[in-house]
Length: 213
Image (cartoon, rainbow, N blue to C red):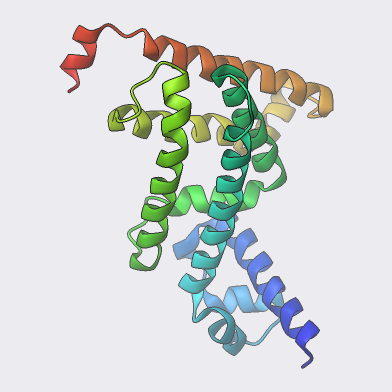
């Protein structure tokens, strides 16, 4: 097998696993099923990834690298906090639209108690916190408010991901056309919803904050 053939086989394994994990969930998929869909020998999964969990680790790493890059690039822009946050949300929407299966698999895997991805998750969250802190200050939020951070992050991703999860249902019920015009309006709605929510959080009276301290 040539080097190119090896790379192609590795990519087929990743693609097959991504599709199966997104549709059925990590624990419901076996290595035989992945190998069959990827048209490779089971031993190749062990060779490239040391098993099914190794595939998930690779998928998680790809997601984390790409989303961190999106946030880092958006936050590094020389813009006020509001348009900077809008750019972050718009770029995340574009990413999820182009990488729905990848996002779905990682979103499902985040709560799983798998030792091999525990360190990945911890490092990713710490990196995101470092980016969030500067943005939070610009929005008038307390950067060290962990309750706030752990509420905002999952809520933002959930809002975006839920739309893509239910696209087929929305298309059937409402007859929507998910074209470029739709997503221009969708981005306006979601960015305004999240941005106004952040502004509202910045205005929470001190006595209410103390109730949650």
